[in-house]
View 1 (cartoon, rainbow, N blue to C red):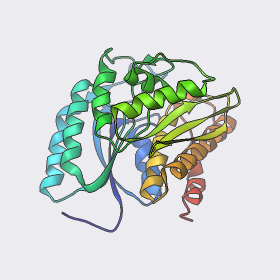
View 2: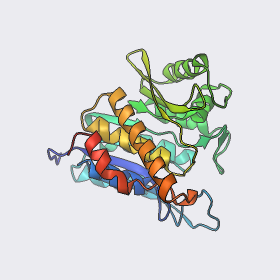
View 3: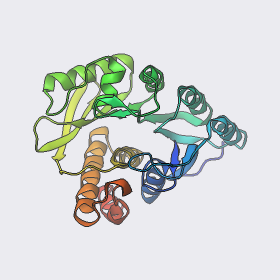
View 4: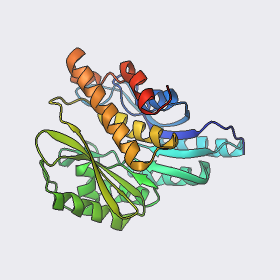
Length: 283
């Protein structure tokens, strides 16, 4: 296999040509952290789907496995596979196969099961989509569902925040019963002033919180998961990676809310990249 000393990740997401999310977040965040980022696009959209109408959509399902097979033929493998939004049940099955083809022995699979929020599936997903996403989570080493996604995959009712500790632990227990992966559950809130994540590793649950900012932007989940991936591949522990991802995402939200509060345009993470590099001990 063709190898360099630089860490290499394959990001399997869609491309929204405008509106920072998916690959247009993963690629710059991971690259800024010094990680070679190879990409397998699952679809191309003219904009993301939140707040825009009439956007174009080009499905790239038929290209996923040919890309993976070509890499394999050329002796190219990756230290990590990081998956995000997948547009169909067919893509979930294909991505599972692609992971087997391109991930090196000892590499890791990070699955962000992007499919739902605020108690409901995103538009266009059938009701049985969570059961397909479960199958991808089953082969993962780390998963990063939000509260809604965790509830759907474990068969629990969705509960709005603030949450009880018992509810969060019930979700984590359900997730741990369906996969051996380490868990980073996002959107956890025990009071109205804070929001964060719960992590599960080696049977131990820990929490990381940040001040809740009264603002909502598309793409923040991608900022979080991409930063988490960057931190993990930079050698940070799961909990430390979750802390860095929480802190950086909060910084981006606060900066955007103060300077450019247009929800559709997503967060200005680019201006905060120097802060991320400091958090990762790279500068």
